[in-house]
Image 1 (cartoon, each protein chain N blue to C red):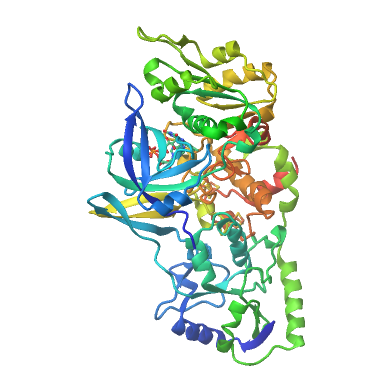
Image 2 (cartoon, rainbow over the protein chains, first blue to last red):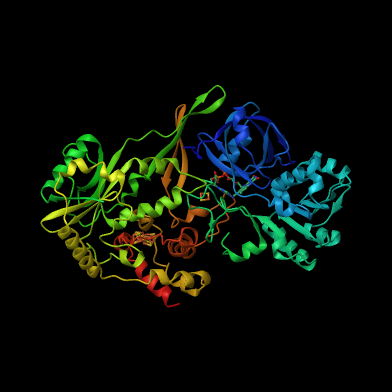
Length: 279
Length: 340
Ligand SMILES: Cc1cc2nc3c(=O)[nH]c(=O)nc-3n(C[C@H](O)[C@H](O)[C@H](O)COP(=O)(O)OP(=O)(O)OC[C@H]3O[C@@H](n4cnc5c(N)ncnc54)[C@H](O)[C@@H]3O)c2cc1C
Ligand code: SF4
Ligand code: SF4
Ligand code: FES
């Protein structure tokens, strides 16, 4: 019997410090056994359990896209036991990875539609996966217009800076990067995400919004999209609950009858309306 | 179905014979408690007892269980082994409510998509010999309110029914039939069947506690925010006794433990009644007080499990009622919900 609790062995092959405060890093892993990579077929929006023997496990959204082969990436903020141990790691270290877990961004539903991506802070990770997936080669044709609004508190806290730069050069992404407050070198936009969304005002015609960020950003951004005519079915987000097993057994992460680890983490606002507000 | 009759005094001997051939877990008196444990030399299995204090779920889902092991290498910590294989075993003397709890736990641990190998392995290799409650032992028993019955064979491989002067042994499954050889060859006749039916009807009559457990699901569906929840939790100590003794509670934590260069990952029972259960690293806790935790316990048993598996996650064993230190009574909570 396949044991879903035993992690695949992986090796840290690249570490990128994403932010000036140095507490957010992107870890690139390669599978020690090539056949495990075949088994780790994921879809943007899914997550994995990063497993450090002796420390524990943490559920982290997959930040790379399945179109990027040979590795998987996770962007992790240093928080408690496991994530701190991870931040101490060096390239070449071996650890474990479970998954892929959870549902995913609803790719089939998104196909043929205009996609509005709204991200705040480092919760941008699985949105980055989705963007890279949508713009990879022939995939781009399967989606309509892509609008991205991404914000951080200040320029030093923006993650994936090189990629933002590259996306900015493309004419098939309408990219709006904003910071709450700029600094002397910042030439881009200033303003909060909800305000920028209002200015950009993406059309709700045949469009879906995918949004991830701090609760406060989401709270102020949603009304903007309602005003633009997006229905609750067409606004999609990802939930977070404390997790352990990641496969709907340990009973920890339920919101109403749904386990966020197994039935989520991705839900539309319409689906969330049917659940309790306990998250 | 194969059926046998055995003499009352023969039962202990039969258990002894099975225990000589395979691992047997049975109720044993330990100090003042009746507990399920693996029979060792000199242990006297009980055949007349009310019910065990601990639920036999411990046998398939131990309170603490090694999931995997690892060891330090030059590359860092590396996996060094999975769970240890268990052998075949017989779980003897399980009351019908507890036997049914395995059917409920199977729904969770043995789902189509994710299978829990630790639970399933032990479950598949274990034969359950259930002991019907000819006389339901406690005033707090309410199995008949939650789809159970004191003489039910649901989940059992063998069901033993005390007919007064002898036991009727029903070999419900093929797994159970493998134990036939221990039970002699006195085949049961229709008189025994009739006697069993009469005992079952009588036992059902003897259950005095009835609660509207099946009626409250639609009420729970729409009353998550009801002020009723403000009234049930104040005295709760968050001790977790109710969940640890409950045969259907399955929540667990996963913890790592290291000694020198070697370590292991364990799963340990956890409880939704504990404040830390849902607390995130950031400090955010979606269930901030015992109110939310009690609501979770009630909702999980009588609504969420029904939503997900079409079954109530309570077998009416009454343990939580009997052992709650502050006398919180889930029967009263269910009754009160039915009046909302
Ligand atoms: C679906 C999902 C995706 C996530 N994606 C990311 C991401 O991309 N980047 C990132 O930095 N963080 C992410 N998180 C949050 C991250 O899981 C927690 O910050 C992390 O588990 C803290 O672990 P720790 O061991 O460092 O902290 P400790 O406080 O030592 O945590 C103890 C354990 O509790 C559990 N736990 C504690 N807080 C959380 C939490 N908020 N969510 C889930 N489990 C928790 C974990 O099992 C953890 O190991 C995500 C959470 C979820 C549920
Ligand atoms: S046994 Fe009683 S006091 Fe203890 S957690 Fe359960 S309800 Fe609360
Ligand atoms: S909730 Fe109480 S009565 Fe019901 S199965 Fe659990 S311990 Fe027994
Ligand atoms: S993390 Fe265990 S049930 Fe969701």
